Length: 433
Ligand code: TRP
Image 1 (tube, rainbow, N blue to C red):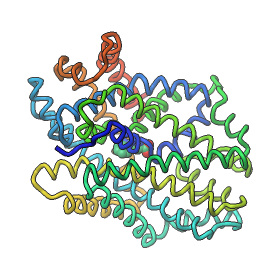
Image 2 (image 1 turned 90 degrees about the vertical axis):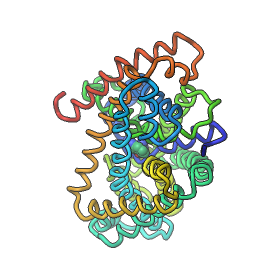
Image 3 (image 1 turned 60 degrees about the vertical axis):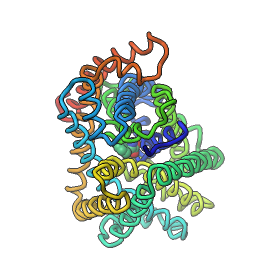
Image 4 (image 1 turned 180 degrees about the horizontal axis):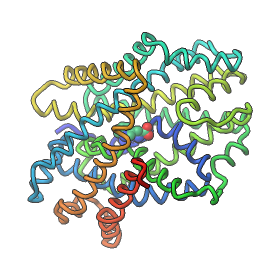
């Protein structure tokens, strides 16, 4: 049985999956927009009512099943006296991971390209229009994007092909501490050079008037996405978790790391945006247009920009390996060797990425299909499976909480509150709520 010896390797790998592009551009922006500290409070509640319970459920299935999401679902379902067809949920998860990888690696490729631009200092001291023009030029250039997206795909494949312990385990043990360090350097820089008071105020000052019902649904949806739930990435990693580690405690650590990184990223980004009198834009624009303009105007911008884009690239890489791993682990169990199947799967997602580069309609369609439909439905099915189908005695023996009251609280939340919340987010994303 391949696996990790230390529970920290599992925590770092799962936190690596969770901490990604979503933490760096999405969380800071939606927080600023929907009421700062007031939104953070609601978001923390969502992490507690939907994120943590569902993540515990995913890890639990993975560890009990001891294999990839497809086989783990089947094993645990059969062990609970249920239909082996629950393995379909694992198949959906493996497919969702590959589909997400197709556009995630395109964006990660942009981050690599910007790392290179920063390193060579090519945008430093340029007028703002020129710096923002670079992003439109890049996204219009098929060959350049194909190259960087290909390089990122190769990096992902190299890590996963090297194996669970030697590849994924070792690399997160190096990359995650480096990510934390770079993030701290960025915040330090923001405190010294940026308008920290204004940035912190935009991010954290509570404004309860902005806390609309929509804000609550956005917080819920993000809690789900940011923890990488709904497609079996965390389930696949759960299979490599050492038996002595507590599922519940590890999940709390992962959720805490993810949230801290999000808030710290906001505190690193907004002070720089405001001290250069820029508007805090949303989405890729914040990362690839607004911030590069700030870097181009500041002293030492090439170095700060390099640090920032290396940080983004690492965050993306520790997420992308968890998008591929479920499919690789499944094929490996069917008797194939890990390196060739890894490169084969990544070749498929790289090809899919070329379609995303060629047409933004394909890009948007894949994003919507996975984030709006597949992940929430996958998460709903996982909550319903563990809450209503899996044998309670098995669930309680896996969770690793000694307190009966806390155990019951988790169980009741997972059975009722989590499915209702996921359905609300789903209805919202379909425009029904
Ligand atoms: N959590 C990642 C982020 O914040 C995105 C993500 C969602 C993801 N679902 C995933 C990553 C599944 C890996 C696996 O950027």
